[in-house]
Image (tube, rainbow, N blue to C red; front, top):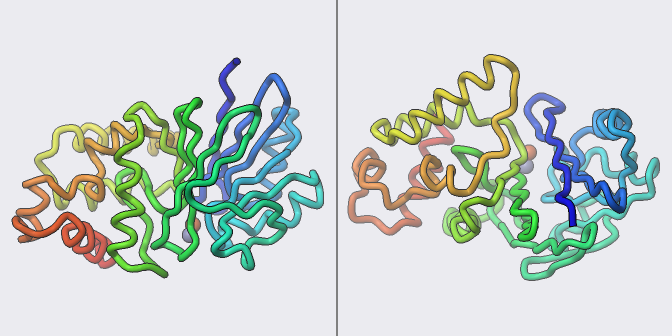
Length: 257
Ligand code: ZN
Ligand code: FE
């Protein structure tokens, strides 16, 4: 089986659109639908027909294109059962532990409450790719709007057990500002210094910083590194539980300029 083609692009201001295309069957999925017009332009550029939308959560900048895309392509919309009432056009309601098939590959659903109550992520083990929405970003994580810090800690921590080679596709291009915060709490992390420099280079030429990999995030993303002695010392939480370190990181990031 040939590999699927992944085509990420930025739309709106800093949202990621992502198209996943199977050259054999022609099946094409969009991960979230931030902007129907831009998704359609990207499809047309490649000569692809949209068959599926994978919705991560109900926020407008992730579902606004659902209705228009469904009307135009008759695509199947798969989204979180726990907030199905707020997902326009939803056809298949899924929750953590479910799996479904796209282009003959398994797609596993992860429950990720915290950013929104029903937020889910999608993992394609055979393709070594995960679509994290607004739960995990490169060098950061989503804001906690609807769940507890403890829930968000557990949601984010699930990604640590995926194979390190897994490609991480996320919902926003926030990597450059995330890097500034990450360096403020772990300035001595050489891998992070290198990643921050790479991100500056990429953004300077208008290139995308995603996907990264789970392995890269484990080395550099403070929200996955709550055991780091340097981070713990920076927060004055040397002996705290990991979840407490996570919560303090998230609170500080909320107020970080
Ligand atoms: Zn969101
Ligand atoms: Fe968002």
